[in-house]
Length: 462
Image (cartoon, rainbow, N blue to C red; front, side, top):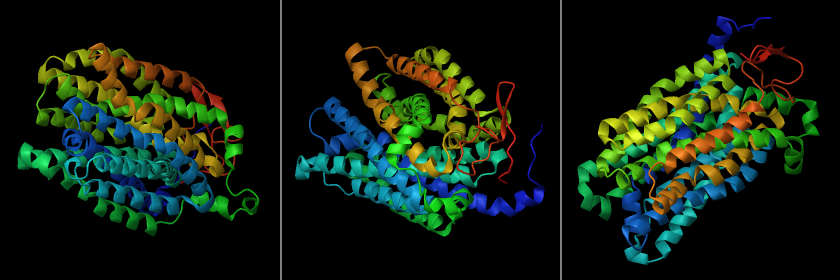
């Protein structure tokens, strides 16, 4: 049997709402990663301004504070996820983006350690915890919102723009910090210049709030909400979620180990690694990863479209196997000058793109509508908090203990193994409808084909 493609007229009618949904989803992800960008690229200045001790001690404290926000994310997932399944995706997403952006803004207004002593790092920790709590509901909700709005046959392509927002936000934050560093100079940056990029978070949050408040909730959620059975099944209680959906929770958690260890090593930790371990200048250690990220942004839509054609699992296998094989050679190459660092980063970024491009289509499809927001938010954030956000701190500590600059490569390889084991048990859901209360890709509407499950949805979601 072949796919029944939506008509050109249907696509044209839905193009406007889908584009608005893509923008509303991506702006929140961009705001979240804008914070990570300015924090990661301003780590030297932030640690000197807000923490005591030597440069090495202050940097480790700052990396630990970066990780603290991730430890709170599961609590945010437990709170926002079930709320999003009961009240709707857009209401929760409107709250998370404004909380997230205001907390980022306040980091830029904190007094220094020299002014208020230990209150400075304590306030930073509190704000990072607030950011982590709000972020716990952000990505799972944004990916769910995007996936439920996207046409079934283009979910990978549409979802890739959520990750485009990820890299765009990170790059914007990084470019702002780098630009301030070049224009103001080292002394001014240490004195007050590092604060300027944090102030941009407020307008980003306002734009995101406006876009999300103007959108209707997703068609999939509205259908579920209008169904008579929803009067008795308004979302899934947490206990039932863990009992009934423990398999996809574990599978998604394993995939996120691979996804986010690679992500935070390549994006968040790389400037610190290049400066401390490879001896590059401040500006060069900031610029090279940015070039890699901009290249990844260009490739994301193509990789997302590829996942729509050949399946999510196939592009993940290509990515996991490629990173596992290339990690050590590429990190070795990075130690051989600027050209080697650029090539190493470029190759690893290219291999990572298929994972990043397909997750917004793949992860939400692992749960039914009534448990989708909660299931994704909880599994994603628990795994991210343990393995993702801690990756920069852990790799930095291990390099300090062992003196081996290949530690990040070994760490990424181990994460890829975990992801590969999880991927073995994941159901292929490419082209599958997300409508209804059943598991996508399971039961009616799916049949086993070559290399996975060929889905023949009964109700195509245009």
